[in-house]
Image 1 (spheres, rainbow, N blue to C red):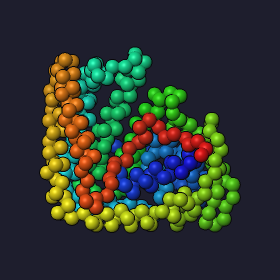
Image 2 (tube, rainbow, N blue to C red):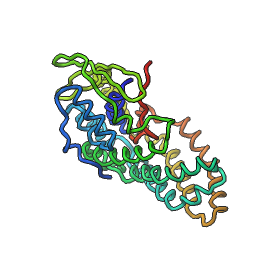
Image 3 (tube, helix red, strand yellow):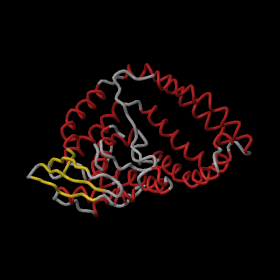
Image 4 (tube, rainbow, N blue to C red):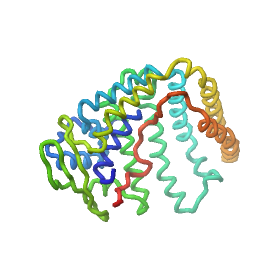
Length: 322
C-alpha cells in the first residue's frame, strides 16, 4: 500500500470494514471511467475534505458488504455498552471544550512556548473531532442497524477530514500535508479492460507505481480486491460468533470501567480553578492507568476488533519507496 492514491482509497476501505457533520456532497462529483482520472478525482476530492468521495469510490458490492457488516454488528453488540461508550465520547468533547483554558494551563502539559502555541491552535480541531464522533451517524446501537454509508461518509468522514486538514496545517515540515496529497499526479502506465498500472508522483516524493483492478464500475487497488471477500467473510464470522453469554461475561467489567471514566470526567468538569483542575487531572491518572491495563487484559471471546474511523491524526503521509 505504497502510493498516495492507494492510501486514499484503502483508508476508506479498511476504516469501513472495521467499522470503523455535513461535508461536501460526493454525489456532486462524478468519478470518471478511466483509471487514472478516477483515482486522481478521489485524491483531489479527499484532499479538499470531501470524505463522501471515499464511499463513492467503492464498488456497489463493497458498499453493500460494509453496510451488512455494520448492521450485523448492531444486532450483536450490547446496546447499553455501546451507547454509554459513545456517550462518554460525547461528554469528553463537552468537558474539553469547557475546560480548554485549564487544560492549556495544566502543569503536566506544559511544553516550550512554540509547542504550547501549536497545542492551543490544534485543540479546537481535536475537540471538534471528538464531538463529531460523539454525535455521528454511528453514535448509537440503533444507528448501526440503520447504517447509511453515504450519509456517514458525506457527513462524519467529511467533518473528520476537514479537522484533519486543519491539524495538518499545524504539523509544519514534520509530516506531509493534505495540500501535498492533493498535488499528487496520477499517470496511466498501461491498462486493459480490467487492470491498470498507475504511476504516482508528488512533490518531494519518489515516483511509484501500483496495480489497480476494475471491480464493477470502480477501480480498486489489486491487493485490496484480492483480500476483500475473505476479510468480509472473516468479519461476519467473528460477529456471528458473539453470543449473549460472551457479552455477559465481560459486561460487568466494561460497565465498571465506563462508570469509572464517567467519574473522572465529573471531577475534571467540576474544577473551577487551575489548581483544582490540576489536582483532578493528576487524580485521574491512576484510574486511567487501571482502565488501560483492564483493556489490555480483557477481550470478549470471538469478538472482532472494532474501531471508529477518524481523519488522520495530523495528515496522511505520502509513502516513500520501500
